Amino acid sequence: MNPNIKNQASVKSEAPWLAQKAIVESDKATAAEINGSPKLQASGLDFFYGNNQALHGISLRIPALKTTAFIGPSGCGKSTFLRTFNRMNETLRHARMQGEVLLDGENILEMEVSQLRLRVGMVFQRSNPFPKSVFDNVAYGPRVNGTRRKSDLEEVVETSLQRAALWDEVKDHLHKSALELSGGQQQRLCIARAMAVDPEVLLLDEPCSALDPIATAKIEELLFQIRNSCTLVIVTHNMQQAARVADFTGFFLLGKLIEYDTTKTIFERPKIQATEDYITGRFG
Amino acid sequence: MKKPLSFRRKAINAIMFSATGVCTVLSIGVLFFILGFLLIQGGKFLSWNFFTKLPAPVGEAGGGMANAIVGSGKILLLATLVGVPIGFLAGVFLAEYGHAAFSSVVRFVTDLLNGVPSIVMGIFAYTLIVLRMKHFSAFAGGVALGIMMIPIALRSTDEFLRAVPASLREGAMALGAAKWKSIVTVIIPAAINGIMSGMMLNLARVAGETAPLLFTALSNQFWSPGWNQPTASLPVMIYTYAIAPYPDWHRQAWAAGFILLAMVFIVNITARTIVASGMSNKSRL
Image (cartoon, rainbow over all chains, first blue to last red; front, top):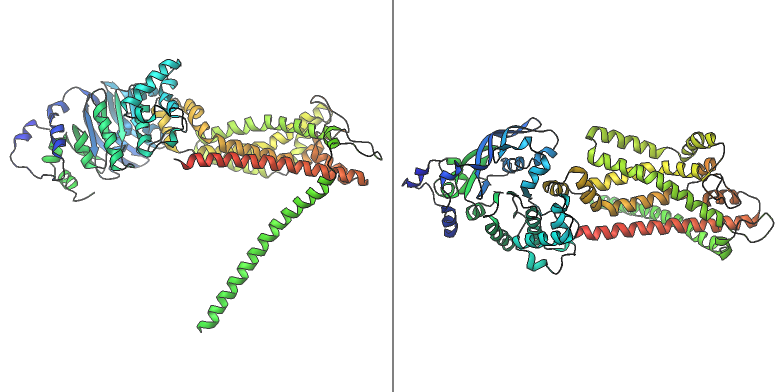
């Protein structure tokens, strides 16, 4: 996390498959921001499934209005970590958390859980549209939170679908079942649904892992569009994706946060051997 | 050495094939025999009068079972009002709120309750209602059948709710929906086709119950207005008419059997159609 690291001449490894554009994109992020005032902050976070410890003392700060990616092999705890931010793990039995998570400096455990989830939205690995119409899917969040007026709902549905780059494809089929959409459209619908309550943070749990490259590209494009209005935290298996979309990247291994820095540093000059091994494809 | 083994295998295969095949034909055969017999015997005596007239006195030709058809309808309506809400809400509790250990105990007990002989249910309702009210009634019959509906109503609600993918629950909760709200607005609607068809099959099953009604609704040769009088029902009419010594009554019993079967059939087919439409919805996921 030392900003001077950039000046070091020795480049441990170049990942040849990284698109040049992506590097430039991530360049805007500076290591200093990591230590600035964070949107989300975890300190000393331990997490247990029964007797099984899934997270070991994780501390990190997620800057506001930036995109942060978590990478790491399967089972490394990155999804579990992501799900602590909207207290989604509470729905699991025998799950236990120690440590502290702050949203804008406020302890999330002391917040009303539905209020927290309004501020911290989530998109899941597999698209999970409700078996309702496209309109009713997007309007679900606002309705649950008390919006009743039809004109208000229509407006929020249109804006959200536009933000999720889906409006043009579905505007004539708003009352068709959401299950008739393609896989990629369904996932963008889920993003629109999450955006409809205007969250401050959007958590994305491997949002593209079930999609083909074209659908993935569309999602990434829309992430670029919403990144300026919403803090994005994305878990991904796809390292190119982390390199393309994220300002900051954290590498997880066996429930520990191994390294966390600007995406550029993580992919070009990782300080820790395990990170380098992982991003160069030596394991995982 | 090889040849006899191969012969043996072929022989065993042939035996297995014919044994299972014959049993399949036998089971379908019995069903078709009953269906055909009822169709011919019952259909033959079916007339418009059967649906519109009261039972005729012995010796007098004609007459119908209008009162029993209406009576069955009333008793089944009451049974649905008793059994479906209780079973449904309890099923929601088991699937959504109950702790694993508690739920599995309740499921086991419910299955036991489902296995209680229907005549025992009849005695239960008799003791509970008929003895207190001092007379037989449609109300007692409806309650008896309603109690019989609870186990299946509960279990089918429970099963179909648990089949709703966890991702939908998470999706609703991630949008700030309280648990009850996600249950009402997402989970139950996602399972409603299955639950509805479970309820209909449940209704079709109790529609033919006779023993509990003998203790509770009894029967009646006349109209029984309201809920508080002995009430005729198709199964009990079939029972009474079939064991009577009059050929005229036997014909009426056949016709009643045919109508009861037709009703059960229609309910079954409707239920399966509902499930099938739900399936095609899900396959698009």
